[in-house]
Amino acid sequence: PVDVREQGGKIVMEIFKATIDNALVQSLDVMDFATPVSKIETKPVGENVVIEISPTGEYDYLAYQANEVFAVEVRSLSKQEKDALLKERLVFTGDRLSLNFQDIEVRAVLQLLADFTGLNLVTSDTVDGRITLRLKNVPWDQALDIILKSKGLTKRQIDNVIMVAPTEEVAAREQLELESQQKIEELAPLRSDFIQVNYAKAQDLADLLKSEENRLLSERGNVTVDVRTNTLLIQDTAAKLEDIRRLLQRLDIPVRQVLIESRIVIANNDFAKDLGVRFGANFDGSFDDNFTLTAGALPGHLDNSSGIAPGIENNGTETTLDANREALMVNLPVNAPSGGLNFLVGKVGSYLLQLELTAMQTEGRGELISSPRVITSDQTQASIKQGVEIPYQEATASGATKISFKEALLKLDVTPHITPDDRVRMDLIINKDNPDYTRSILGVPPIDTRKIETTVLVDNGETVVLGGVFERNKTKAEEKVPFFGDIPYAGVLFRRNEQVDDNNELLIFVTPKILKETLTVR
Image (cartoon, rainbow, N blue to C red; front, side, top):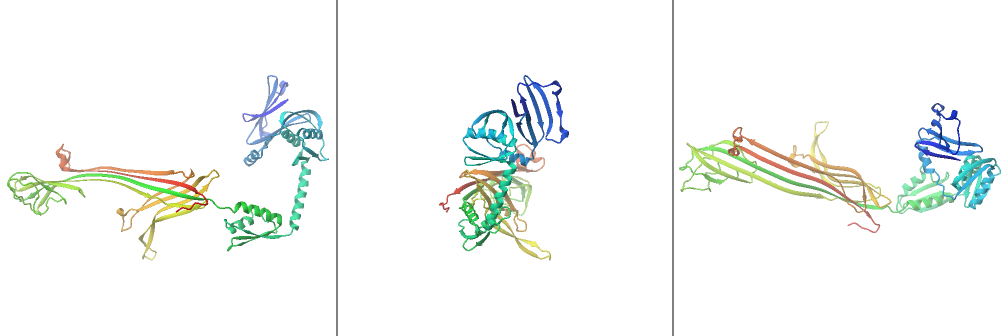
């Protein structure tokens, strides 16, 4: 008995209860023989003899015994042949049996298999020869396949009848049948038929029928399209017309539709804080006592009107300031203050010392939601867009100018594909443009672009987050008078502090919904 198996990338043939001469225990390098085998190693293992065959690359092998010779055939395969072999590899499901015969006629073995299976057997007169085989517990259909391959035979099965003949004889007979069938088709009368196309485009189906790669019409067949009624006029043999009608019944079906809902959310959270100071002197004011006076500072000038009224007046003293003789020592105000306070802090000679404090704090939160949605057919691209066109001047080759337009759009491009398990694969391009008028150049604003391009697989009705962008702009600025701005406590009178913390976040959500044929979206 012999056992042949694949193990560790090698073909291992183990001969049970056998001995081998020491001169034959060797390792043969057969790389130079231009075969898919690189090495053959023979060695005794206990009471058995093991022959290891080391193939290279992709390969296939067949082990069989013919008369007194046990053979292992190894042939190399290309990747395409390997893939095809895996797809075409037979799965043997017959009842198992064991065969052990020495020099038996092939016809007798075939008759034995027919008796075992209960099938009818027709054997060609040219089937002859004898065979020696030993098969243990193998499916009967595998045993039949091994016998046929070893003797160059082929079988054809129709219902419960198996016909066995040499391969060349079967090929010649089938070739004759094919030629006879072709002659019948050439002589068959032509018929015409009108086929109404309901859902597909008749022209697309006509192109499919006439395509050179997969021509479905016979050599004498023809197809014509009536675009107005979406009808096909086909002329061909009766057999071909029946085949074409069955094909069109499978192709001319309603295409499933998908509702694509997207949501683009732009959220922002802004915070700014600014504290400024102005410190200076005003000449020639009337002030009798060294009392501190205060007054409102908005819109932010120390020399507002004719005085600091309304403020605090002590002992009925009025103070009059000259609006045109302001002399500032520190000028670090807030650009757009939301509150301010003026101080008259004292008098030095004929000068009045004045202090102005201004402050500003802003907080803002916003959320911009855009929700484009579109319905499209399976595997059909759809596009929806909304936005503005921004005009701008552009120089021409002649030196003149012309008005051109730049689009700033909210745009959704999607191509859905419905899988057999009712999931949706989408090829998506989502674009969100915003013109930024705060940074305009010659009246033309730049465009802030947010775009995502991706492919996702989503369950029907489920929402997926395609992606997001989080931006944070955090700044802290300080302006000060050298040396004086670093003085502890009093230094605040000689510097300006500004804090900004802006947060922006972009999120994109998409929800596909497969529409039923009776569903209407409003």
